[in-house]
Image (cartoon, rainbow, N blue to C red; front, top):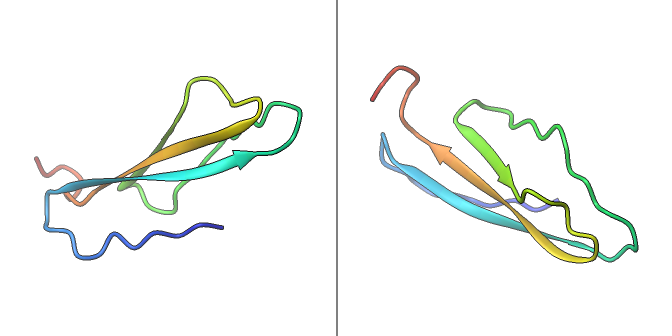
Amino acid sequence: MQEYDFGTIPLKEEVQYNFGFSNPGKTLLILSNIKPRVAAISPNGSESPPSRGKGKIKVTYDTAPPGFS
C-alpha cells in the first residue's frame, strides 16, 4: 500500500498526487470500484488498463466544504 501526506492545505484549495503502480504480469490489470473514504477525494485512472509495465492513478483532494464555491 502506498500513502501520501498532502500536508496542510488551505481551505478551498485543490491538490493532486499521482499514485504509481506496476503490472509485472502477462495479463491486463484492471482496477475497478475504487472508493475513497471521504467524498473530498476523487481518483481518476487511465482509460485503458496497462497490459504490462507501469500505470498511475491521479487523486484529487478538494478542501472546499460541500455546497461552498
